[in-house]
Image (spheres, rainbow, N blue to C red):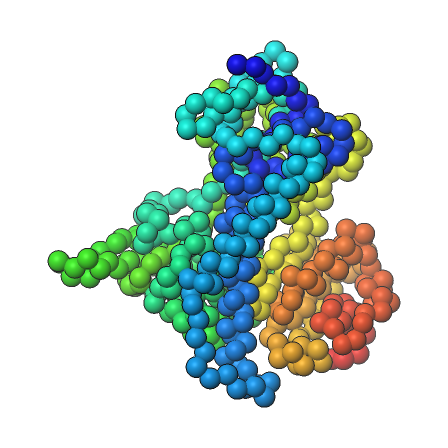
Length: 474
């Protein structure tokens, strides 16, 4: 079999992989991308993109339900749940075709198959197989592993894909369940809860830690908890899942129910139509020849240095497969940073203190940097400012007054340590403070930046002013 030679071969065509491939090609490197499934990976096909389509549909449903607040009456509101899910699949399909176009535009060799790495005198040999048969052999001077992650399995929570689901099955479920138990109140669990609840499902969330969205500032997670309970969503915090079992509703019945046994603050057996397990990720490290090559793993992920080099020369790892944070925009940034360094460019390392995180529930939650609790644990004396959206004219006008902006500064050096937003369009607002933090902004620079009125973004300016006793509108 003829062997093709490349400067860079990327194994895995998710957001991190295809971003790395495009940047490598832009830098003049002969590049190949190997992907066994759909280009765009989990994010584009089963995560970020289709889920936002579903969540928009849920937002529309909630808006229709409160339309009387705007002087508009909507009677007999109906929905086609299968059509809602189909739209999300159409959105994912169009996005995947867009990535295919980008591969052609950037003259990247895109190969559909499963890549396995082996030693070679001139770098790394990547055997690409399909249906168990090797279809191509590539020789790479540099190889980037971007194989992503999958839903993590835990004892007693066996995902069967039918009654006990991971996000992969949940995202394409085209029949609305009447009752759902969601294990885990992180971003995935919280988003699915909002979606199913909007269409009438009874949702119970079980979270082992003491707050929903455990990695977020507690003030923001408390807002989400209150708003969810107003929607009728039950959130059981400080509660551990002991087991999930599937049982028949009667001895000779074909109908099955899911029994989730929990303990802690709540001791109960929760009965539901389905259960969704959303409690973390495991790296996709098996079957790619990594162990045979001696690539070092750490807690199930590829161990890398600040240049994304693994323990084996010529092999790099980016995105979810090298560990948290498991975010698509982090994978893309790492892919670009990695190939720029491979190409010999003198670029700074990624500042992981300036990574924004977003949960697309309603109200949305977005944050960057340290929480108030973490800042104090690290020994900072902090100045904290808050501005509730209930005091925002724009928020009142659009009928979305839940939540707040919280800004945290170092009292000694006036450094922006963290910004936390819970409210309407928080996902869009976080970009301003992320840019500010990356540029080492001071509170005065934010206050002196004139924000358009009326906008939700004014709340960032007002919260910053509040930290220093200069707020105007509260």
